[in-house]
Length: 242
Ligand code: IPE
Ligand code: IPE
Ligand code: MG
Image 1 (cartoon, rainbow, N blue to C red):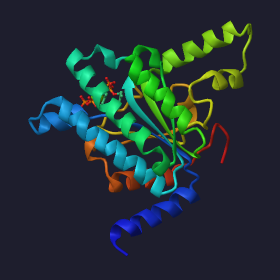
Image 2 (tube, protein in one colour):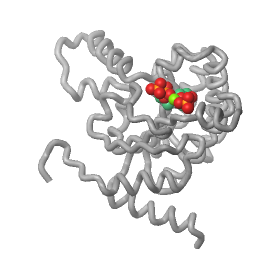
Image 3 (tube, rainbow, N blue to C red):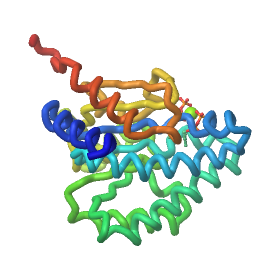
């Protein structure tokens, strides 16, 4: 058995032992990766999409059944138009490939965010993919035009429109984009920044946080192993005494 397979097997055991069911990634550092290589930022995003493909496969190989990735924030529209267009084009390709490979991959895709701001064809493709993959058990949530504050605000407005005058935490959770899944156990941020940048603000309440200096396009098995190992040594108290 080579070291790759041995690592996967070791991580499978670790993931099961520490009940790591949902991992979320703030995929940061694409621009820095490109700049360090004197490449245009767009090529950093292209390498970032490759890292996304690799990482989703790795997570499933080690038995993590729900993965959430932060692909584009509500604040990322502030970037130069050409960069936004390049990112959208790359994501559009990724979604097309996911649509084509859905029967082989057997992943349930769910988009978190307001898709109405996207090109109508792209938004339609996202909706089609959600419907066509809804039967599968392993989940990939793609946060696209996502902001935690916008999500909570949209949930409040939805509950008000339903006629509610008072709400419970369960009502709010059920009105969020993530109503179909549990809260993340672990949030991994690449590229060294210690902040959430408006990601899963409600759902992160008791998530463990892990930051690595690795830039997202370089994220590989050893980085996932380091994150899982760190998680496995955390004591999650949820406010209780342990
Ligand atoms: C993350 O990489 C991708 C998106 C935010 C879409 P960045 O583009 O933020 O990379 P840095 O932070 O500039 O290196
Ligand atoms: C967070 O990264 C958003 C995504 C990864 C999609 P940013 O690069 O946009 O975050 P800030 O601006 O450094 O906080
Ligand atoms: Mg960034």
